[in-house]
Length: 304
Image 1: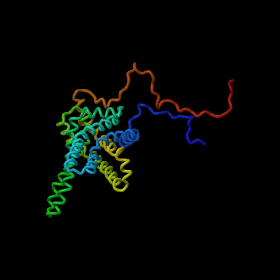
Image 2: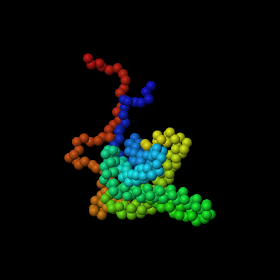
Image 3: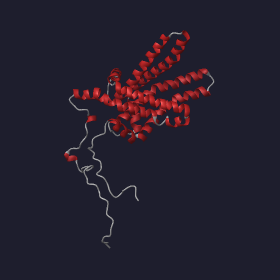
Image 4: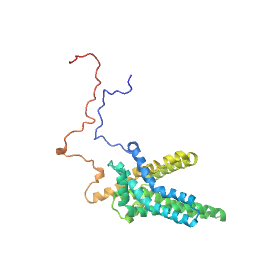
């Protein structure tokens, strides 16, 4: 008894079949690019090494000045390079979304170098915002309890609100950086506007990101070996993929498409390339050919 029938075939898949949309397209790309996402995550994880080296510096050196200087150098290195690395990862995700072939390592580092200046500034600002959030959660609750002044929770809430807006801006700013030639000022301006224009999608992206971060936090506390295995190969690329999937269509609608409309052209990302009549040598029959029937078993004439 055979579980698989290798002697018959279906009609095939037409190259002109309609592209999946919504959640179907999301999982289609995710499953097809799953192993590549791991590779992208591993590349991105390399730029977090300076943070782990800070822990080593604190452990191995007793001189406070040496620890302070080396830690500052490592931290500054991270703050300067994490932005270009994020731009490189966003470049790969955009290629996946528009069905464009990409060489992961080459395109990652090419984008890293090409957008280094702008991306470094953006990444540096992101780090400052994160430090501000950490400081506000460390200082204001203690002061509020010590002086019995609940009003001190207000600046903490304000800092958190600003951080959430900056987080939503990040869904757009790196994608626009690698897809357009906008100035840094316009990148910030447009990403700020899109953070509010597409609020529903941004909230969904944020919730998924928080769930992913929460799962990683639980693994870190209760299943640390599994956390160490998953951290270098999955969460960052997955969250970037989710953000890109939800945000890039918004960028196309409000930034890229209007530009091509203003010059009387159609966004090439939305045009399906079809060869001209003179270029066609073989016709793709996917979806048109008849199914191959299974060969009937029986006696027949034997040719000798």
